[in-house]
Image 1: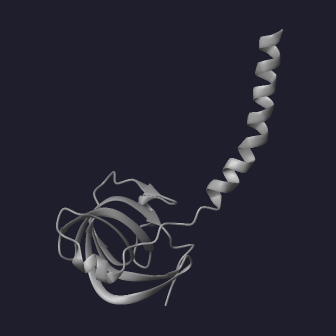
Image 2: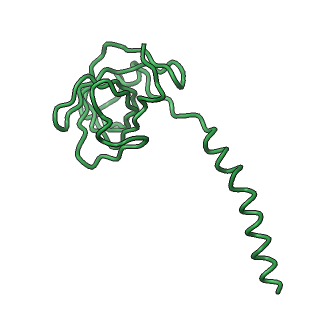
Image 3: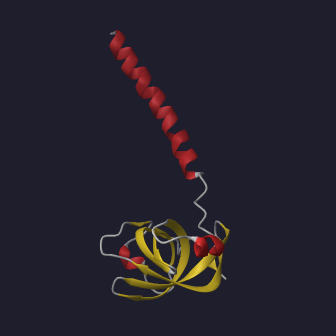
Length: 133
């Protein structure tokens, strides 16, 4: 009987705590991408986190423009080109690989292979949430 009370009490506490934990997770601020200056200073082999807008897609290559983070919902175009290798099977968050098309805004976690070139390790589709001006 004592074990049953413990199980019931634990279940009730968990049920009460779950919404608070979910709310705290949702209220977490999104990550801030590297600035153009930080990206320019990155060395080959270094992990990078950048925001880009796709200009065109050719097979597994994305031709993109680097964006400057202004707010969580606004970015500014820089005019700096970044070529991204986007292999089949690269994890895509908040969308699907089919959402990675011309005009899409992306947050890319990757590795700099040489200046202006990134090997994507994970891509977040921000098109619905970020406006570029």
